[in-house]
Length: 255
Image (cartoon, rainbow, N blue to C red; front, side, top):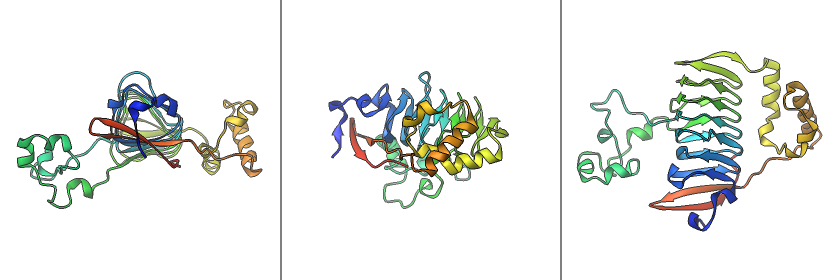
């Protein structure tokens, strides 16, 4: 059963969050995660994801993999409005379940579609955004809704991402373009096959030098082949806002 968050400290559950008001709707997270004061609406966050401690990033319906790194003052997966309708304003396509705060105002509710008006614009478009494992989003970036930033990809500061970024690519600019890959094709292929983010690396930390890419990769490939890598199964929770109360409930890991 969900437990009122007032009875617990989020840090004890591996979530570093400056204030619960930063979460709107639900947040599913694997421990640990460092979200500080950034704002998330209906997002999922994998283990060891880290947001810059300064500034405010806003993320909407975005799925963050494990080990993601997010810079300050970025906007990720914001809602989009129809550009070919009579009006792009929410009064033309809203529903109470999508815009509860707007429907609380009688003037808006009188004008906007009722709850029984059938499928809405939101129901027919892509609504989720993906920031894959170990991806890095630099400061002050914009990531368009529906985009996937691939595993290990890095997006430079102030970039505008309007299309998918391949795994382990480095992209910058407005619109963001790939300038090079982080590793050779052979190394990338091995990284993706190893999928190290699925395993608990802590028992092996003294046996590798993470600055040495090929040696570390070869070590963990051997560990995996010999069955010495154990799956990472972090405690996972759903943090939910119901009216003014926050509740916390356990759930299975995301990955």
